[in-house]
Length: 424
Ligand SMILES: *Cc1c(COP(=O)(O)O)cnc(C)c1O
Image (tube, rainbow, N blue to C red; front, side, top):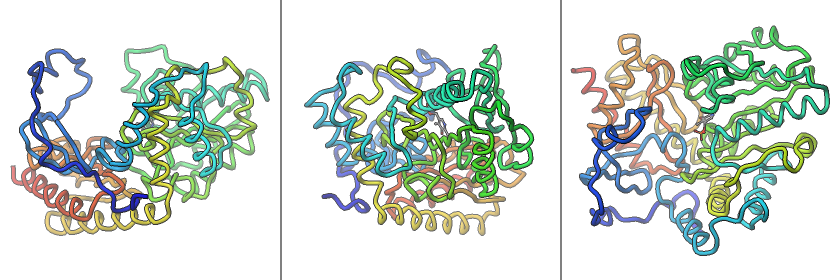
């Protein structure tokens, strides 16, 4: 058995040599042939290992972004590579006309580790939320009648990119020009208990919340707010959905964030970290709620496919371990200490907040709306981190097993990037 904490990718940097290519492509190719919905970094990553990335020029980068909180075990973790390769030699796809062993093992382990009795595996976070919201509405209409369909969400929340997900999410900019969008959704400010109370009634089917708002600005959910959501759902026979797509799978130092918050949802959605880089998601719930979803009610071609399930099962084996989760909090402290030291020298952050290895550094007013400049300076200084909120936050979500040395190198390079912007 691999040591869950100390095991890192064993691909040596010397293996990162350029291979023969059939076609020359570069960053400029992106601007030629891709939808311009993203503005990716100027370098093109070629290989990666642990918390390091090498680009096509052979330059190395410290990865403090973890592929946006996806790479729970870093790049190319040996146990995940082994699980994926072994499954690739066994079977790739079975379809929903047959089940498969990795999916069954994954679901069994996930239900044993959580409040849930049942798992619906899918392919992404958006799809998990879509299924969770459909389940909540189906449950409400089945048990209480067709009038009970309202969805309560929060402003600045992020729940994915389908129509239902962007409508539920709290950023109007993501639905602009794409209407009409699904009806029956109400938004209240995050962590505002009174606003939440004011919009609740018996026609509400569900409340959907991130236990900590990530994209929206790295705001941990308060005990009062999450507790009120639970209480109001119970009172009005609505379901509480926790979107743990970014907060789950060890990110906050617990297997799922709800376990630390002391509030148990009725439905939980997971993706990102659960696959450690392989696209898989799921929503999980109780027997009682899942019982309204009958054969034919919902489906997906690739959900629970053996490759993804084999990887996710292995991620769970490693992350659902007390010592591993404790170590996340130790690394959090090391990062926080590093940010405090940087701030002492440069007075650049007005707040550092977050939970576990999921931290946001809010820039002082002078650099409002300029987080993207710091991110680009990071790339020039060979470190990758993210932004959040109103382009005023530097967001960090490294691999949960990042080494102390990589944290320290990442911080050094982050500080150099900050100095570059400050002195520009
Ligand atoms: C990333 C994310 C999603 C969407 O997941 P995809 O896999 O991109 O579809 C939904 N909710 C939260 C909180 C997320 O962070």
